[in-house]
Length: 597
Image (cartoon, rainbow, N blue to C red; front, side):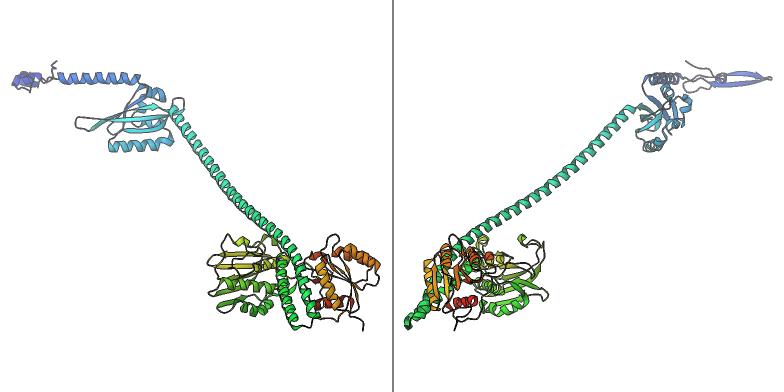
C-alpha cells in the first residue's frame, strides 16, 4: 500500500519522479503568485511486511518467554539489559523496568557478584557464549542458585547485535552436588584415615613380625646354646667319670713304677721304672685336661694384675708361636685386677697360642687385646648378667674354622688338625677353666680370615669357688712309724698306695670301703692318721671324714682323689691322683707331723 506524503503535489507539478514512485507538481497560489509543490511516493510494502514480521516474531518470543520455566533476559551489544520476561520480575519481586540496564545486578548475591561480572566481561570481550553460576534473590528474600547462559545474536556481517539468555534454578542440583562433594570428601577422608590405619597397622605388624623373628632367632640361639650346654655337660660328666677311673689306673701304674724304682738296685729296672713314671705323668696331665673341660680341676683363684700377668707370659707365648708369627699384646694400665688362677690362665693363653701357630703355618699375626666389658655391649655373653668382667681377645690371621665345625671346637677330643697334630683337648680345657672360674668364652671365625677367641674373666672382688686347703710345697720328713688307715675301694690303687706308705716307713691298715674303715677305726685306737679316697660306693670319703670326726675329732684325715665335687671338699686337705711318693710324704708330714727321732 502507497502512502501520500506532504510533498506529493510538488512532485507532480514539476514532473519529477522518484525511483519506483510517481512524481508530479501542482501550482499553488500564494499572494497572487503561483507556487509549485514537488513530492514523491515511495513503495514501503516490504518494509511494512518486515516490520510486521518483526512484530509477529517479537510477539511469539514474548509469548514463548512467558511460558518457558526460566528467567529470560535480552541484552544489547554492550551488555545492557533491554528485556526480561515476566517470570524474571515475578521471581525477584521487582518491576520489569527495574531489572533493565544494570538493575538486575541488585538481585545477585554479593559473594557472587564479582564472579558473575568477570564471566560477563570475558564473554563480551571474546564474543563467546556466557555461562556462570550464581545466587539470585527470590521475592521472599531466599537466595537460590541459578545457571545463567547467554548466546550472542549476530547480523549478516557477523557483528553481535544483542545477547539472549536464560537463568535456570539449579539450587537442588547444587545442593545435591555439594552433598555429593561433601560425601566424596568424607569418603576421601575416611579412605585416608583407613589407609593411615592400614599403614599404621601394617607398620605395627611389620614391627611385630620383626620382633617375633628376632625373638624366634634369640630363642633358637638360646635353644642351640642350651642343647650345646647340655651336650657339653653330658660329655663333661662322662669325661669326669672316665677321668676318675683313668686316674685310678694311672695312680696304680705310677705308684707301681715308683715302688719298683725304690725297691730295686738293677739299673735297667730303674730306667724302665723312670720311663714308666714319665709316661704315667703324661697320662696324668691328659687327665687334668679332661678335668679342666669337666670343670673339676683344682683352682687357686686370686686377685691378679692382668697387665703384669700378660707381660710375664709374653715370652712363653712368643716361644709357643715360634718364628714367622708377629705377637702383639695390648692391655691398658688402668684395667684393674681380675680374680683368676694365674697359672691356669697362662696355660690357657699358651694353648690358644699353640692353636694359632698351627692355623698360621705360613706366618701371620697374633694379637692379644684386653679391655673392660660393660653390661649390654654387643656380643657379650648373656650368662654374665651385669657382673663387671674383663675381656681378653686372642685373634689370629690363620685359616679359620668352617661354620659347621665352630660349635664343636670346645668338645673334648674334637680337633680340626690333621691326625697326630693334636689331642682335641686344648680348647676344651680353656673352655672348662674359664667357666669354672665364673667367666665365659666366645669363639668367632671366618674361613681364610682367622679366628678370635674371647675370654671373659671376673674382676677381683667377686665371690668365686673356694680354693682347697693347700699342701705344703716343701718336702717334709717321712712319717716313719706312723699307723695309717688306708681306705680305697680300688684294690689295685690301694695295694700300690699301701706299698708307697710302707716305703715311707708307715704301718698300713687297709679298708676297701667306708663301712669297713669305721669298723677298723673302732677296733684300733692307736691309728695316727686316715688316708681315704673320695669317690667310693656307699659312704664316700667326705661322709667318712664326718663320721670319723664324730668319733675321734683330733684324728688327722687326708683325702685323695682324681675327681670330686670340689665344693664339698672346701677346707679339706686333698692329695690329687696320681701323686708321687714325695707328694704323699709331704702330705702326711703336713697332717701328722714328722716321725719321732
